[in-house]
Image 1 (cartoon, one colour):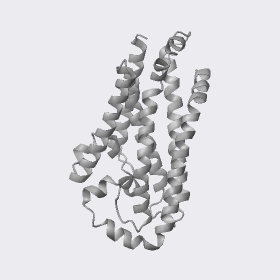
Image 2: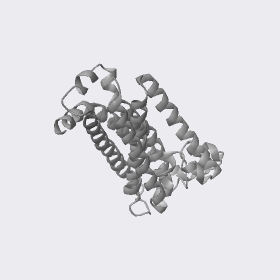
Image 3: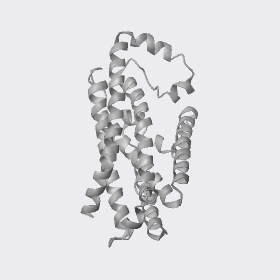
Image 4: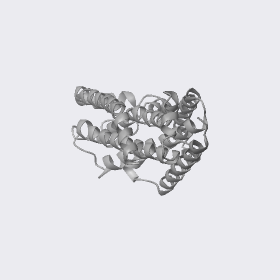
Length: 261
């Protein structure tokens, strides 16, 4: 197991660094954009408030953009457009790439159970996602929160960062499940893409209609950044997260164990 984990870290570190670099560029752009708009935030907030509510939701605008929380929530939304597809792609590829690149026959014929191999990849992916989320939180703190004088909500940066990690892990688990169910990597990617788009569509619909039932149908509403920053986590969503992640991983492990290569 230890050797498998080391090898997987070595294989995934380059991709992780690329995504972290993109996240850093995004936060850097937001920082300089904030500096350029700092003297005209009131005018910008007034203009944005005149947009239709659906447009504001689709661009991640919640609360008052003249406050640090309003700006932080907006930037967090755009960071999620990087964080969540990365998590889904990681789930889709962490095991399926062995099939795609023709190394599965070599890897799965080693004197190690398939379940152990897949579990090692899950552990490495979880660490990578945690690194991504923590790096995002640090970037947010130094490029958004500090320049705006901090958030009024104590610990909001930490709780929203953990919310990002939990959401990422949900998408990762779904991607892992899709990859195990479909023999074709392209079919798994297609399904993962559709599910990601559906999750965003449901999230927008749930927020616009304020239908709390729809909140349970999309991972993007489990840890909504604005709600988490103001009120913290909801126990029902935490329980649902562990249930969905656990079910997806167990199903994927069993599927890969029985799968013909």
